Amino acid sequence: MTTTRSQKRWRDKNRLLKSQLNVMARRNAHDTLDELARAYRLRGKGEAVAFACFVARGLMQRAAYSPEAARMLEDFAVSYHRDRDLYAP
Image 1 (cartoon, rainbow, N blue to C red):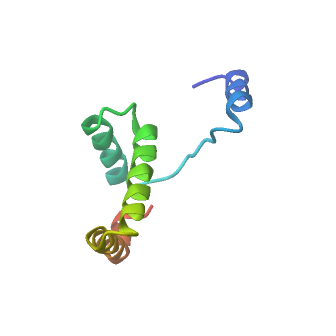
Image 2: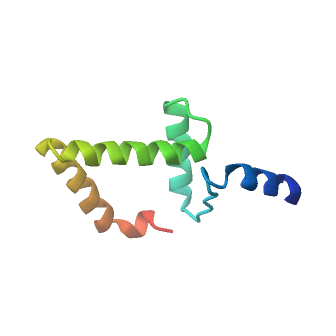
């Protein structure tokens, strides 16, 4: 663990750019983040979360003009909501 002083330095330096996100997630979510990190040569689970957001945003933008992407995004949303208890903390 880092010291309080080094945490404060990090927060002061990055306060306009970054914020810490601590979330509780099921083991499956952690495993999937590890898998994303390995598959796409990312630097750990934190970067895997950023990558997943990047991909979701890209899919949302693509869905604006591609019916196939819109259908895919809708299918993912429906599937997630149907099985939410498996994924939500």
